[in-house]
Length: 150
Image (tube, rainbow, N blue to C red; front, side, top):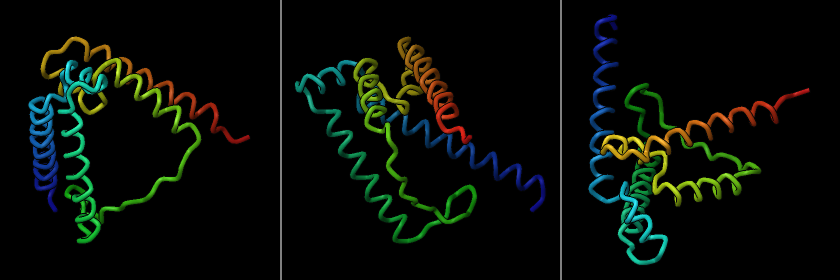
């Protein structure tokens, strides 16, 4: 494969990913997944619209994974077989999930919805992004500190 063809294929793949990401963000926005009021109403058990969105996403995801496993597809970019390795349980997952849930409840967003919220011009998303970056850095520092081998 020539360098020109490789360059074209790489950018074609990036453009495809960008378009899919934009479509996903648009659908999230239309579904109300970036609206604080919908999150608040869900947590107050007043409106279950987001629960329906999450249920639909889980259903589509499960069906997609089952189809990917059944037909043993290859990755679009690398061409390698898609691998579904089950990750082992790690101590601290419960605490991490609790912290994630508290952050989700306070900010009405998760890591996937922050870029959409930024695209919508929501100022609060910047603070959420800062929290995500600081949390990720903290996790990395703690991992490197506690996983040192003597």
